[in-house]
Length: 233
Image 1: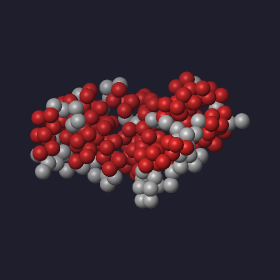
Image 2: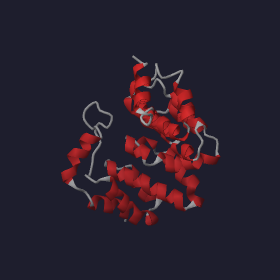
Image 3: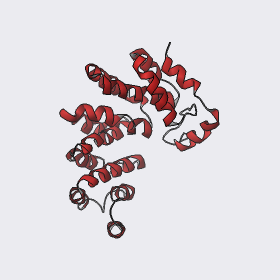
Image 4: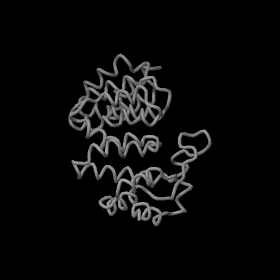
Protein backbone atom coordinates (compact mmCIF):
# COMPACT_ATOMS: atom_id res chain seq x y z
CA UNK A 1 0.00 0.00 0.00
CA UNK A 2 1.30 3.45 -0.93
CA UNK A 3 0.59 5.28 2.32
CA UNK A 4 1.92 8.60 1.05
CA UNK A 5 -0.43 8.54 -1.91
CA UNK A 6 -3.34 7.36 0.22
CA UNK A 7 -2.82 10.05 2.84
CA UNK A 8 -2.59 12.78 0.25
CA UNK A 9 -5.90 11.78 -1.28
CA UNK A 10 -7.49 11.64 2.16
CA UNK A 11 -6.52 15.28 2.73
CA UNK A 12 -8.13 16.49 -0.49
CA UNK A 13 -10.19 19.65 -0.08
CA UNK A 14 -12.39 20.33 -3.13
CA UNK A 15 -13.22 23.82 -1.84
CA UNK A 16 -9.64 24.90 -2.48
CA UNK A 17 -9.15 23.40 -5.93
CA UNK A 18 -10.33 26.36 -7.99
CA UNK A 19 -8.18 28.84 -6.08
CA UNK A 20 -5.05 26.74 -6.44
CA UNK A 21 -5.72 26.19 -10.13
CA UNK A 22 -5.92 29.97 -10.64
CA UNK A 23 -2.83 30.64 -8.52
CA UNK A 24 -0.70 28.17 -10.46
CA UNK A 25 -1.94 29.43 -13.84
CA UNK A 26 -3.55 26.29 -15.24
CA UNK A 27 -5.71 28.00 -17.87
CA UNK A 28 -5.27 27.60 -21.63
CA UNK A 29 -1.90 28.94 -22.75
CA UNK A 30 -0.69 29.53 -19.19
CA UNK A 31 2.48 27.94 -17.80
CA UNK A 32 0.58 25.39 -15.69
CA UNK A 33 -1.98 24.53 -18.35
CA UNK A 34 -3.90 21.35 -17.63
CA UNK A 35 -2.49 20.66 -14.17
CA UNK A 36 -4.92 19.20 -11.63
CA UNK A 37 -5.23 19.81 -7.90
CA UNK A 38 -6.59 18.04 -4.84
CA UNK A 39 -6.93 21.30 -2.92
CA UNK A 40 -4.12 20.71 -0.41
CA UNK A 41 -2.03 23.61 0.91
CA UNK A 42 1.74 23.19 1.31
CA UNK A 43 1.77 23.02 5.15
CA UNK A 44 -0.66 20.10 5.02
CA UNK A 45 1.44 18.36 2.38
CA UNK A 46 4.53 18.84 4.55
CA UNK A 47 2.76 17.31 7.53
CA UNK A 48 1.72 14.28 5.47
CA UNK A 49 5.29 13.86 4.22
CA UNK A 50 6.62 14.16 7.76
CA UNK A 51 4.47 11.20 8.77
CA UNK A 52 5.11 9.07 5.68
CA UNK A 53 8.56 9.58 4.18
CA UNK A 54 10.34 6.98 6.33
CA UNK A 55 8.16 4.17 5.03
CA UNK A 56 7.96 5.37 1.42
CA UNK A 57 9.63 3.04 -1.08
CA UNK A 58 11.10 3.98 -4.45
CA UNK A 59 8.03 2.39 -6.01
CA UNK A 60 5.82 4.66 -3.89
CA UNK A 61 7.76 7.73 -4.97
CA UNK A 62 7.62 6.62 -8.60
CA UNK A 63 3.84 6.35 -8.39
CA UNK A 64 3.49 9.72 -6.66
CA UNK A 65 5.84 11.71 -8.91
CA UNK A 66 3.88 10.49 -11.92
CA UNK A 67 0.55 11.58 -10.47
CA UNK A 68 -1.71 13.91 -12.40
CA UNK A 69 -2.26 15.84 -9.17
CA UNK A 70 0.12 18.66 -8.41
CA UNK A 71 0.19 18.16 -4.66
CA UNK A 72 1.00 14.46 -4.94
CA UNK A 73 4.02 15.26 -7.12
CA UNK A 74 5.10 17.82 -4.52
CA UNK A 75 4.72 15.21 -1.77
CA UNK A 76 7.00 12.85 -3.70
CA UNK A 77 9.63 15.57 -4.06
CA UNK A 78 9.47 16.59 -0.40
CA UNK A 79 9.75 12.94 0.65
CA UNK A 80 12.76 12.58 -1.64
CA UNK A 81 14.39 15.58 0.03
CA UNK A 82 13.84 13.99 3.46
CA UNK A 83 15.36 10.70 2.34
CA UNK A 84 18.33 12.63 0.93
CA UNK A 85 18.80 14.54 4.18
CA UNK A 86 18.62 11.57 6.50
CA UNK A 87 20.18 8.70 4.52
CA UNK A 88 23.64 9.54 3.24
CA UNK A 89 24.02 6.11 1.66
CA UNK A 90 21.05 6.84 -0.61
CA UNK A 91 22.02 10.34 -1.71
CA UNK A 92 23.26 9.34 -5.15
CA UNK A 93 20.09 7.35 -5.71
CA UNK A 94 17.99 10.37 -4.68
CA UNK A 95 19.84 12.61 -7.12
CA UNK A 96 19.47 10.07 -9.91
CA UNK A 97 15.75 9.79 -9.23
CA UNK A 98 15.37 13.57 -9.22
CA UNK A 99 17.22 14.11 -12.48
CA UNK A 100 15.41 11.30 -14.24
CA UNK A 101 12.00 12.73 -13.29
CA UNK A 102 12.39 16.41 -14.13
CA UNK A 103 9.58 16.06 -16.64
CA UNK A 104 7.21 15.86 -13.68
CA UNK A 105 8.76 18.86 -11.88
CA UNK A 106 6.66 21.22 -13.91
CA UNK A 107 5.78 24.28 -11.89
CA UNK A 108 7.76 26.87 -9.95
CA UNK A 109 6.87 25.59 -6.48
CA UNK A 110 7.87 22.04 -7.37
CA UNK A 111 11.25 23.38 -8.49
CA UNK A 112 11.82 25.84 -5.66
CA UNK A 113 10.89 23.52 -2.79
CA UNK A 114 13.06 20.65 -3.98
CA UNK A 115 16.05 21.61 -6.09
CA UNK A 116 18.39 23.46 -3.74
CA UNK A 117 17.91 21.28 -0.62
CA UNK A 118 18.66 18.26 -2.78
CA UNK A 119 20.62 19.07 -5.94
CA UNK A 120 22.27 22.15 -4.49
CA UNK A 121 23.38 20.27 -1.38
CA UNK A 122 24.68 17.38 -3.46
CA UNK A 123 26.82 19.65 -5.59
CA UNK A 124 28.37 21.63 -2.74
CA UNK A 125 31.61 19.63 -2.98
CA UNK A 126 31.29 18.56 -6.62
CA UNK A 127 31.61 19.85 -10.16
CA UNK A 128 28.64 22.09 -10.92
CA UNK A 129 28.58 21.97 -14.70
CA UNK A 130 25.24 20.12 -14.48
CA UNK A 131 23.55 23.35 -13.39
CA UNK A 132 25.16 25.34 -16.19
CA UNK A 133 23.96 22.75 -18.68
CA UNK A 134 20.41 22.87 -17.30
CA UNK A 135 20.35 26.67 -17.45
CA UNK A 136 21.81 26.80 -20.94
CA UNK A 137 20.03 23.92 -22.63
CA UNK A 138 17.42 22.49 -20.29
CA UNK A 139 14.59 20.82 -22.17
CA UNK A 140 11.98 22.87 -20.31
CA UNK A 141 11.54 26.19 -18.57
CA UNK A 142 11.52 24.23 -15.31
CA UNK A 143 14.87 22.54 -15.91
CA UNK A 144 16.35 25.96 -16.61
CA UNK A 145 14.84 27.27 -13.38
CA UNK A 146 16.41 24.33 -11.51
CA UNK A 147 19.75 25.50 -12.89
CA UNK A 148 19.58 28.87 -11.15
CA UNK A 149 17.52 28.13 -8.04
CA UNK A 150 19.78 25.23 -7.01
CA UNK A 151 22.52 27.81 -6.39
CA UNK A 152 20.63 29.00 -3.29
CA UNK A 153 22.56 26.40 -1.30
CA UNK A 154 25.87 27.80 -2.53
CA UNK A 155 24.80 31.31 -1.54
CA UNK A 156 23.99 30.11 1.94
CA UNK A 157 27.55 28.82 2.16
CA UNK A 158 28.97 32.13 0.97
CA UNK A 159 29.72 30.88 -2.54
CA UNK A 160 28.29 33.39 -5.01
CA UNK A 161 30.22 32.84 -8.22
CA UNK A 162 27.91 30.22 -9.72
CA UNK A 163 24.81 32.30 -9.07
CA UNK A 164 26.29 35.23 -10.99
CA UNK A 165 27.59 33.02 -13.80
CA UNK A 166 24.29 31.19 -14.30
CA UNK A 167 22.35 34.46 -14.01
CA UNK A 168 24.44 35.72 -16.90
CA UNK A 169 23.48 32.68 -18.97
CA UNK A 170 19.79 33.39 -18.34
CA UNK A 171 20.01 37.16 -18.68
CA UNK A 172 18.04 37.29 -21.92
CA UNK A 173 15.64 34.41 -21.26
CA UNK A 174 12.18 35.23 -22.65
CA UNK A 175 10.04 33.96 -19.75
CA UNK A 176 8.97 36.05 -16.77
CA UNK A 177 9.30 33.10 -14.38
CA UNK A 178 13.01 32.92 -15.17
CA UNK A 179 13.34 36.70 -14.76
CA UNK A 180 11.82 36.41 -11.29
CA UNK A 181 13.96 33.42 -10.31
CA UNK A 182 17.20 35.04 -11.47
CA UNK A 183 16.32 38.31 -9.76
CA UNK A 184 15.49 36.46 -6.54
CA UNK A 185 18.81 34.61 -6.51
CA UNK A 186 20.73 37.79 -7.33
CA UNK A 187 18.97 39.51 -4.42
CA UNK A 188 19.97 36.67 -2.10
CA UNK A 189 23.57 36.88 -3.32
CA UNK A 190 23.47 40.63 -2.73
CA UNK A 191 22.50 40.08 0.89
CA UNK A 192 25.83 38.32 1.29
CA UNK A 193 27.89 40.72 -0.78
CA UNK A 194 26.23 43.89 -2.03
CA UNK A 195 29.37 45.06 -3.80
CA UNK A 196 29.52 41.83 -5.79
CA UNK A 197 25.89 42.25 -6.84
CA UNK A 198 26.51 45.85 -7.87
CA UNK A 199 29.53 44.76 -9.89
CA UNK A 200 27.37 42.18 -11.67
CA UNK A 201 24.58 44.66 -12.35
CA UNK A 202 26.63 47.62 -13.51
CA UNK A 203 27.40 46.43 -17.06
CA UNK A 204 24.06 44.63 -17.40
CA UNK A 205 21.24 46.50 -15.66
CA UNK A 206 20.25 48.56 -18.70
CA UNK A 207 19.71 45.48 -20.85
CA UNK A 208 18.36 42.96 -18.32
CA UNK A 209 14.60 42.42 -17.99
CA UNK A 210 13.10 45.05 -15.70
CA UNK A 211 11.39 42.41 -13.51
CA UNK A 212 14.75 40.72 -12.97
CA UNK A 213 16.33 44.04 -11.99
CA UNK A 214 13.47 44.91 -9.63
CA UNK A 215 13.84 41.60 -7.81
CA UNK A 216 17.63 41.91 -7.68
CA UNK A 217 17.64 45.36 -6.05
CA UNK A 218 14.61 44.85 -3.83
CA UNK A 219 16.66 45.15 -0.62
CA UNK A 220 18.51 48.29 -1.69
CA UNK A 221 17.52 51.58 0.00
CA UNK A 222 14.61 53.27 -1.76
CA UNK A 223 16.61 56.11 -3.28
CA UNK A 224 19.20 53.67 -4.57
CA UNK A 225 16.48 51.51 -6.14
CA UNK A 226 15.02 54.55 -7.86
CA UNK A 227 18.41 55.46 -9.27
CA UNK A 228 18.92 52.00 -10.80
CA UNK A 229 15.41 51.85 -12.21
CA UNK A 230 15.31 55.38 -13.57
CA UNK A 231 18.65 54.86 -15.28
CA UNK A 232 17.05 52.13 -17.42
CA UNK A 233 14.48 54.44 -19.00
